[in-house]
Amino acid sequence: MIREHDIVVLTVDLPEHRLRKGDVGTVVLLHGSAGFEVEFMTLGGETLAVVSLSKDQVRLVGSREIAQARAL
Image (tube, rainbow, N blue to C red; front, side, top):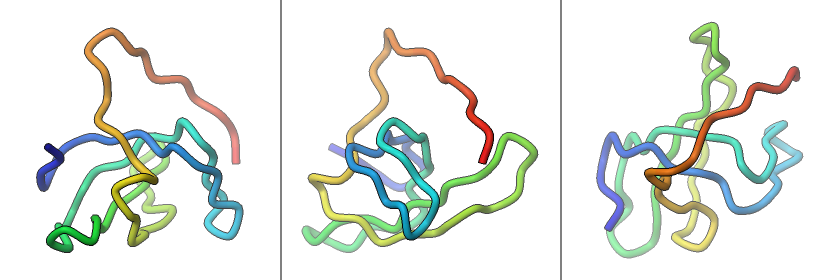
């Protein structure tokens, strides 16, 4: 179950927001059963996008995963 402040992984590309599958974001708002508002930030702390996403567009971070950086 995904909750506010959970770290999630994008499961699809969102080119209109410069986001790619695998990018990591933070849930900032729940939309009931409809989905989530997720904030994606650069490693420098700049908000890149805040996006409304459905449950099939994100997943929880796994305990055996590692983050990877990419340039925009």
